[in-house]
Length: 61
Image: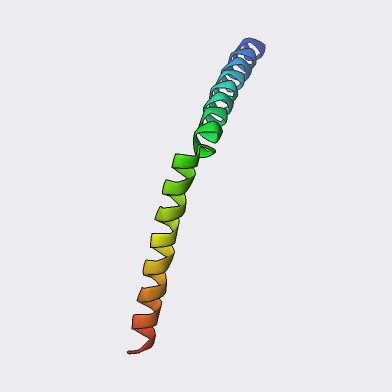
């Protein structure tokens, strides 16, 4: 019985890893699109700029 349950658990783990791997591959191709890269760069720049402004304002107090 232990061997059977171990086999079921191993099959489940392999299935999940295949699903996660295929989703990561699709996400990778989506992240490489020029429009997506531009959006992520703009969003990241906005976040860093707001952090910088926040640090500058707090530093003057």
